[in-house]
Structures are given as C-alpha cells and as structure tokens.
Length: 209
Image (cartoon, rainbow, N blue to C red; front, top):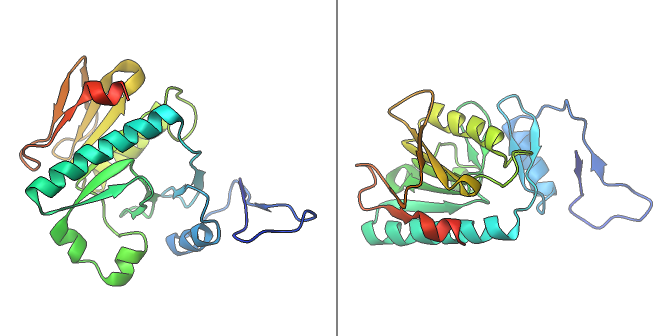
C-alpha cells in the first residue's frame, strides 16, 4: 500500500510505501491517518490497513441522499447524533471502521470525553448503513461489506442495513440475532424497529440516485 506524505515532496522522493504485513495499533493508525489526511483508511482487528478508494458518482449521490434522510429523522425526534462516511469508530475488537452513515444515541455520545470525540469514538454505532458497490471487488464489495456488518453486529450494533443497489435488495443485520441477516428483495421501503420509530427510507430514491 502506498500513502502520500502530508506535505509536498521533491520529485526524487517516492511516496511512503508500507509492507502488506504491517500491523498497527489504533494509536499508530491514528498517527498514519493524521499524516495522510487525504487517504481514506480503515483498520482491521489484526491491525492491517485497508485503503478505501473514493466512491463513484452514483454511490456518492446515494450516500448523500441516505445521510440527508437519517439527519432529517434524527432532527425530528431528537436524541441522536448522525455521522457520515468520513467518521472512524474504534470497535471493541480493536478495528477502526467507517460506515457510510450511522446513528449514535446522544447520551452515549455525550458520555465520551472531549478527547475521545475528537479522535475515533470508542464505540459501535447503534444503527449503521453500508452501500455496496457494483463490483464485489475491493473493500466496498459485497463480500467485504458482509464481514464488516458481522463485526458491527458482534460489537453491539442495534441494527445494520446493507443496501445492494445493483440487486435492489437489502440485508438487515439485527443486534437481536446472530449469524445470517434477513434479506429483502423488491421492497419499496425500509423501516427502523422499535428503537428507531418513524425512521423510514424510500428505497426507490436510493436506487435511482
């Protein structure tokens, strides 16, 4: 993996190159992110870096629509903090993950110290959403995202939605269950459970974004 240094470098110098077997602690990972602010990175439980490539236009538009809907709901009911895809959360297994969109109970958020809020919040979101890319390759492919959803579930997430635009399908990962998610195909809406009353996504506008 190649990461560009944070400051311009002479033509004679190559970007920093990291070995594939490099293992970082969450603190070291934070230092790497600070030194490479333009890079989009995640950290696995084993301490390996994952380089998240920028999204395409369709995925970016869907993310924007999704975030807008979550924010509108959170503002209407109160008691929730909304986060976009640039936020990394430090999960109990030592990984640092960045859902495409997420909700955290406001009391949990306020219970963190100012330092914890400025860094990677050491908690798993209550609700999170991931959008799969058209290809199954890379960190945004369906296989990789299912592993992420399982880690969110194991880390205490109340509810997870994996949206698959190419198949117009949704996988619902419930914190009350373990193992395989509930898959819905051809559904026009997606609603939150009793923890998120009134939360509703019109899936057509997500697929068509």
